[in-house]
Length: 257
Ligand code: ATP
Ligand code: MG
Image (cartoon, rainbow, N blue to C red; front, side, top):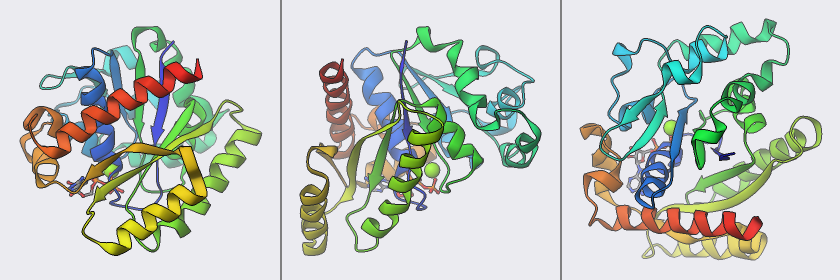
């Protein structure tokens, strides 16, 4: 059965999708079988994997409302060698439509159960909200990866996310834990970032991943070519960091087992 992880942070623009897409590519680069689930109506992980949103026959929206299976809807990311369960705008409607379903927060978990044995890792890219979609991600996952920028307000937002994860753990998904906090878009020349990074280590100890993702323009350029940074420019510092992060994730999983 695959290890299932959510990439979540309710703050917008903190690097969730960049992490989801490049960790998927990084893990695939280490010969892991990976499914990337796009759980955000923005569809950024879909486009960033080179899949055109407007041509989809079915997507995660149809999967969540029971009109298609995951197997029907999965497409390959050709440049990096992982599978994608894509999303498009209509996913925004699922938020309202799902309200009438029984066990509405467990829809994704049930849908993924069928393909769990086909993959080593399933990564879920969450939208920037603590919404019913994110709740579906948290109920389906064994753990959460939290990308964060080392800035002043980052720690404040973190407590809301930690509380939500605790509630989901207590009421809906007892196997859910925070796997780790990932420092992203890091610029070591900025004293404030170093200070916040030190605070993170003091508060969260080994819950902070060793790998640090630097601010790197190649990672930001890659989506416009429909590729993860890891495939777009293997030699860039950003790509190397995400490959290292893939190796660190594989190691962490082995320690837990
Ligand atoms: P949203 O909350 O809207 O889903 P997000 O948390 O998924 O956003 P991203 O889309 O991954 O965030 O990143 C936000 C922006 O920052 C993008 O333009 C992305 O290219 C850029 N970015 C992310 N990580 C890096 C990095 N390490 N170096 C440089 N730019 C980055
Ligand atoms: Mg995103």
